[in-house]
Image 1 (cartoon, one colour):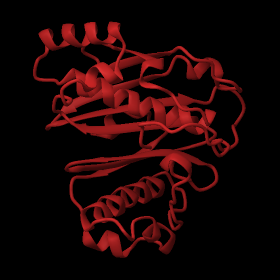
Image 2 (image 1 turned 60 degrees about the vertical axis):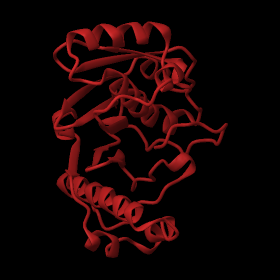
Image 3 (image 1 turned 90 degrees about the vertical axis):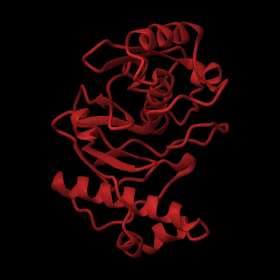
Amino acid sequence: MIEELIPATASAAHTSSDYESAVHALFPEEAALVERAVPKRRREDAGVRMCARRAMSALGAPAAAPLVSGHRGAPRWPGGLVGSMTHCAGYRAAVVGRVRDYRGLGIDAESNEPLDGGLLESVSLPQERVRVRELTMDTPQVHWDRLLFSIKEAVFKVWYPLTGRELDFGEADIRIGPGAGTLTTQISVPADGPDGDQLKALRGGRLCRDGLAVTAVALRCTGPAAEAPPPPVPTTESRHEL
């Protein structure tokens, strides 16, 4: 599914299964990240890294390197690459692009189920809740509250590695386009650096099918080939998971 949402110059891979062989194929640095986790979590972690390596190979990039996590869980991609990973029940996916093409990529996958009671108010703005109600009346089979949450997670995965700044759920106003699966974001806080203007108005796509809500956001390079984004500067804690 995720490959339907990303630009042609990026590469994606996904799986709906966990393979024990993927756990044994983890690099020691990766295995150390989940050595105390329950077996289910280890399989999820291995599965999503397997997807990442497939995406890198499809892009023509070397894939034989560990993918470890930095601050806030953001993956540290090999030089020259930028990407994102996600996993939920029954789905693992990764997307990878070259830094000459993209400043940031963010994806998220969720089960197409309603958010727990009261959570929508915590992750949305009043105007977003109005839009969710309107979209629900038009297309009730999609759980738009969950989709909104997924979009904000994908936005955060682009925002944080480039800014090193936490982004509260209430600082991103999401507009979900009708029919075509488009979405736009208006961020209400400043973003310093060369990506500032673009970061405040991110665009992406969404798809709901087979019990899943999948979202993707891409920030393309607009100038000369960019260097890899710098490591984020730790700030305050957040509820997001990269």
